[in-house]
Amino acid sequence: MKVLLIGSGGREHALAWKLDQSPLVTDLTCAPGNAGIAEIASTVAIAADDIPTLLGLIQREKYDFVVIGPEAPLALGLADELIERGVKVFGPTQAAAQLESSKAFTKTLCDKYNIPTAAYGVFTDIEPAKDFLKTMTPPYVLKADGLAAGKGVVIPETLKEAEQELADYFSGKFGDAGQKVLIEEFMHGEEASFFAISDGKTALPLIAAQDHKRAFDGDKGPNTGGMGAYSPAPIFTQDVFDDVMTKIIQPTVDGMAKDGHPFQGVLFAGLMITKDGPKLIEYNARFGDPECQVLMRRLDSDLMDIFIAAEAGNLDKLSAPKWSKDSVVNIVMAAKGYPVSYEKGTPIEGIETAEHQDERVIVFHAGTRRDDSGALLANGGRVLNITASGENIKDAVERAYKAVETIDWDDGFYRSDIAHHALNRS
Ligand code: AMP
Ligand code: GLY
Image (tube, rainbow, N blue to C red; front, side, top):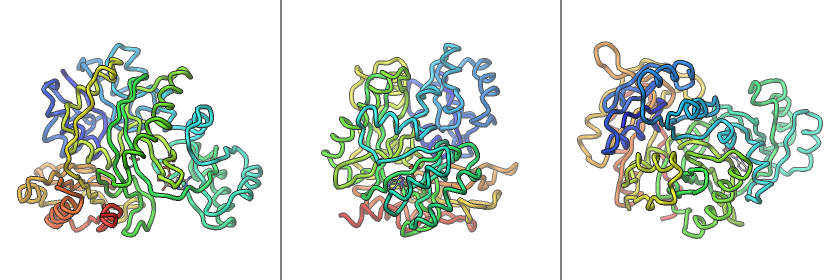
C-alpha cells in the first residue's frame, strides 16, 4: 500500500517507525515530516494544515491510504474531503472531531449520555459567567471552548484572579477560541491518558499512558504539549479500565453514532482518576504526543492492520492488539524557553551514540531539520523524544536518562522527574 502520513511531530515519527515495519506498507510518505522521519520515509514539504495543497498531492500521487496525525487538519475537515474523493483515510470527520475542537460539544454529549465528567457552565457573556464563578469553590477551572494549542485552560486559585482571567478571555486573549468559555468544577485525583480506536461502532481498547504537562520539574511552570510520558500507568488498574470502557468510551462511540456523526479514528480520553472513579477531563481526536511514542514502542501488532480495519468498519473482526510487557519511558528534550519563546537552528549531536550504547533506546524526532551539510538542527519547541524500554519503569527511566546524557545540545532542556508518580508508587 502507498501510504501518506500527515504531521511533523514526535507522534508522527513514532507512527512512521511503526508503519514502516508493516508488510502492508510498501511506500511511506510523510507531509511535512522532520529529519528523523526522513530517514525512514519520503517527505514532502507541505504543512499539515495546508488542506488545498495536500489534496493536490493526494490526487496526483494516488495514495491508497492517508493517516492524519495532528488535530488541525481534522478540525479543518481533511478527512471529509478525502472521503468525498473516495480516498481511504484514518481519522475522524470535522463533525466527529468536534470532540476535540469544541469542549462545549463534548460536555453536551457527556450530559446526554451520562458520561462522568466535571460539573460545568458554558458562557458567551461575562456577567453570567461571573455570577456562575461565585457559586464555585477554588481552585477555578476556566477553558476556552475551541482549539488553543493546549494553552486554553487556566486554573486560578482566587476568585479575584479568576475574574481577571475571565475578562481576558472575553477581550480576545485566545481569539475566537475564547469567545465561548467553560467554567468547571475542579476534580481532584491523578491524571491518565487512555486511547481507543473506533470505527464508528466498535471501540478497540488500546492502553493507557501518563503525560507530564508542565514545563519544569515538580509539575511547575507553564503548560506544554507534554514533556514526557510512560506506560504502563500503575494507576490504570483493571477496575479503572473496565469503568473507562463501559462508562466513558463505549457510551461516547454509541452516542456519536446516534447523533449522526460516527467517530472513526483515535479516541484519546484525558482522565482524572478520582476517589469516585475515572472522570473525563477532555477528549482529543488523535494520538497524544508524547503518549503515542510510548504506545508505539509497546505495540507488538501491525498498526496498519488496525487502521485498515477502522476505516473499513471491521474492528469487531480484528483480534485484540498485542502489547509488550516492557515498560517504556519517553523524555522530551525541548528548546530552552519553550513553550514561550525559543531559538531555532541550534546544533544537536549524539543521537547515534545514544542509540548504539543501548539497544533499548530509540530517539524519535519532533522539531528537527538538516542543513545543507547534513548537520542536525533544532527546528521547533519540542525537539527530541528519548524513549527507552525496560523490564520495569525504573529500568526504563534509568536507560532513558543515560541516553539523554549522551545528547549534545546546549540549547535544550528536559525534565529530570519523568515517571515520578509511577516510581513513587513502586
Ligand atoms: P484540558 O486541556 O481540558 O485537558 O486541560 C488541561 C489540564 O488542566 C488538564 O490536563 C488538567 O491538568 C487540568 N484540568 C482541566 N480540567 C480540570 C478539572 N475540571 N479539574 C482539575 N483539573 C483540570
Ligand atoms: N500530550 C497531550 C496531547 O497530546 O494533547
